[in-house]
Length: 154
Image 1 (cartoon, rainbow, N blue to C red):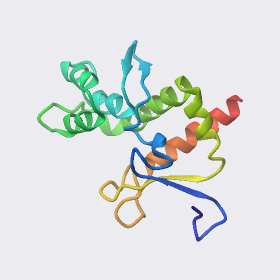
Image 2: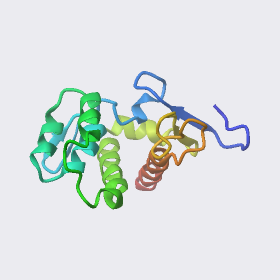
Image 3: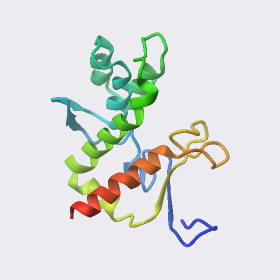
């Protein structure tokens, strides 16, 4: 779909089962980081809020990214004090692992060309585009960064 304000293509993804659902953090593409397997980017990301504690491993082991997200968002667990300063680097590390350890997904990401990648999340104006489409879309920005790295590496 094209952004009506520019000539740049716009690819919006929102759910696991839409055409570009593979871009989302819930997409089942296991990868290895820290010497262990992570089922999804969501598992890794949420668990790193509690890195080095028993909560990290508990989140890593849950069966679904939905449960991992719920556990990671719960403030019943002590959030690491540096979270706000490290969260984007952690997301980037997970995205790199996902798209390099799954060459087929890396190729699909490269095939998006120079399209603007936008996670449509009405209730998330930081990682997604927010309710009004004017959110920060940080996940989309990081995906485009990984895409550029993959293109340079080929």
